Length: 463
Ligand code: PMP
Image 1 (cartoon, rainbow, N blue to C red):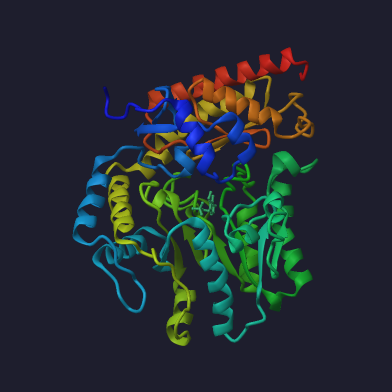
Image 2 (image 1 turned 135 degrees about the vertical axis):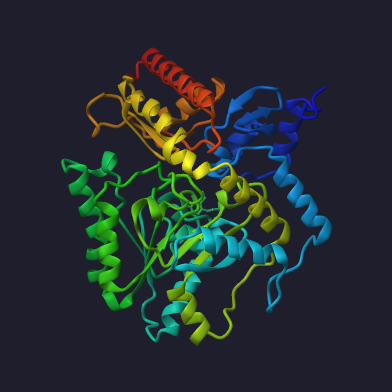
């Protein structure tokens, strides 16, 4: 029996899970009725469930498994670190070798304005850190009235109070009376969904200028920062038009506000550059990172802090009353170091830029020919398909929104491919180690999933 064979009947596991586990982003009632999907093993880009079914992990876990699953080198690095020093904190002027080494490595890999990192355990904690750092920075600069942080509708920055508030997910805001005061949201650069009759370039400029309009309305002396993902991930892989980021850069410079590029998904090679900011030529002041930093082997994130911000803290700051027990956890740092070494040695970022990225993009974009697909987009190794009821009319969506996406996602699972549905868009973000053969399988299974979904919709009279 292979080591990963499941010893328990799936039904038993599901019953125990439903009895005791409240899952994130899950309808607990529905889960109790239907049972959870139980993943027992993973290797490379492949997942195995409790019944022995295999799936291609088209989402790299949750956008995080850059080097693929089951890399013994990372397991051994963590084992060695835990045997040497299982845990010690980084509070009160203390540290340990793995935190030192990882901080140095991140300073080397990130754009030149970044020489320091604040370690956290997750992307959400990174954005809570950003929230407090932005306001503290402006206090230190003697402009403490600059409290407002501007984010975007349908942006995602995590599930904690600041993360949810900075994000623009209305369903999340409705639970817990959020956002907290001092956060403002502007339109997203989602041309397919919201571009109306404008060309992508016109719309990109319009969406960027929403930032300028908001700053003028709020009062430039009250705005501290703008936060955005280079490419929105959880919002549906929204790739901004080419005109968007240059105009945003102009505006943040004009008003001297801090630019926060949330690199939790785009960082660590996803777009074929180490960071999404480099892909778009933007120069952020703060950069939340997580996920691909350790390829998800252990939980770790950080905020990259530019010299502009760090110097204010160093020269004027005193103590920053902020930190997490697991900030710079030694085992997590060891996992991240081993992960980054693999990425460098195997040239995974270069591979996304010039090999597997273009290879998969060409095949993915060809799916736009399918009768159900209104747009097929991809940059680096992250892409989306917009499912539409009437080909050629991008203003017409399925009603109610989301049902067809969910149907398609379930069909995809049954076809052995994990895709995610956001509204009626199908999302992929596979591990960066995806081979050409695996890319072919991914596209074949997507094609079959689209065909099966199309047939199912026809049968039900929904097309
Ligand atoms: N920012 C972005 C851009 C993300 O995509 C996510 C997670 N999907 C987060 C922040 C939050 O990260 P975490 O789930 O690790 O808290």
